[in-house]
Image 1 (cartoon, rainbow, N blue to C red):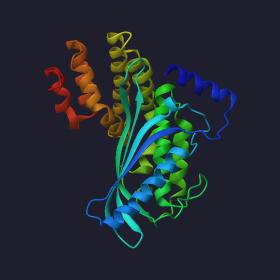
Image 2 (image 1 turned 90 degrees about the vertical axis):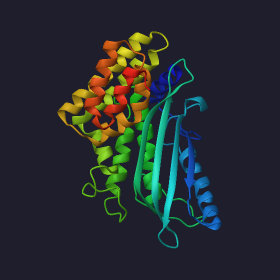
Image 3 (image 1 turned 45 degrees about the horizontal axis):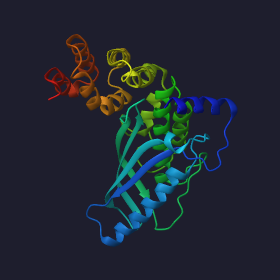
Length: 302
């Protein structure tokens, strides 16, 4: 992990040759409940093409070694075929990053987007460009790829994901005339527009700052000093608390805490009573819908 951080810093200073570079190790799956065998075969072709699109594209301009690629998964569930080549469903995104000196991968981003609509004909090339809206499917996937990268970079350097969140916002801007849902501010308070808006809004800066403190100062130090690492994680949670008090109920807060809730229960279930009580207090405030889960920390996570 330290090697990866140093290599990213050097590449940012020296420039990078993007040729043959890959940024992600992303598993792609497509679930097709209720579809015919022929339709499933079409979706398997699409799965292969999306796998190549996501994993063979150089999204960052850096050259990462195989062990440095960002681990992620994208699962598409097809709920309905609405026309000859039109489909509707949802997309689930998960990303994780290794914790220093361990075999454990910490979840960084987990989100389900229920507004997926796209057109696809078997073997039709997937079209995508950073400066044009060519396809709703590739735009949605590229949007989430940039979010995966942005969240990952935020865990290695303070606000390090900004260039990638800006790329995701550019996709949102180009999609404003698209007929499909998910891109426009007035459609919902919990869609792609608002997620990247929150990520780049200075009001929520402390949420992103907490990602660096949580991972680099907290989790990456747990093997060297468990008590100190856990204290750093608690301080990262207090950053979330301050952000919540300034602007309660943000979409970004829900995504971040939802991604981390199970991990936090595991971490603080065996913490000293005072530290555990503080974690329960903070988490119950920023994520009240899961307060019962957090109170179980006092029972050892049961």
